Image 1 (cartoon, helix red, strand yellow):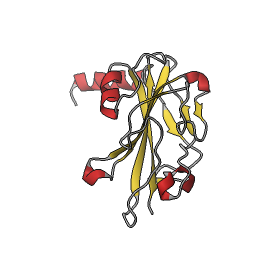
Image 2 (cartoon, rainbow, N blue to C red; image 1 turned 30 degrees about the vertical axis):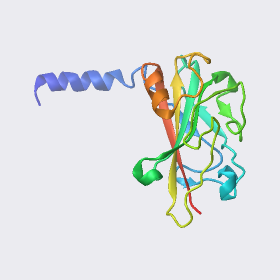
Image 3 (tube, helix red, strand yellow; image 1 turned 135 degrees about the vertical axis):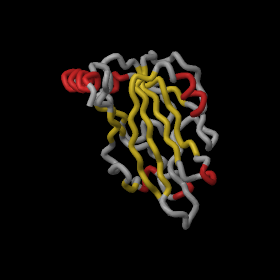
Length: 179
């Protein structure tokens, strides 16, 4: 090892975790990561009550002014996916917790984006009967944007573009569902 690499290794080991590094995680009491989503979370046509699961933002950066959420079935649409929920402008003042059903009804507590079901609310899992389990990826974004800064009705792609320079950290949890 050259002396330059040795010095670099010492600097890295002394530096530890950078101050800007985040321990941001997304948690839920409804299912384990890669576990089965409860039937209540499924869309009504699939026997559920279409309730968004409880979510908890843990370890988000202190500079967070709002959160965004995207839920996507990565197995739907012949590999193109299906967006089930787009929500943003969620204030951290919610104690970092979203109660069950938070995204199932319109509320001033979030701005609804456009999902692939044609609504601005949570649309639960509803894979075709007989399909293998579908994977529902819940992605949370910690943002430096104050609530109300983004227009309502953004698609997943439009939201990701709009928050690209404003994302402080992101976290994911995945649930599965089949019929």
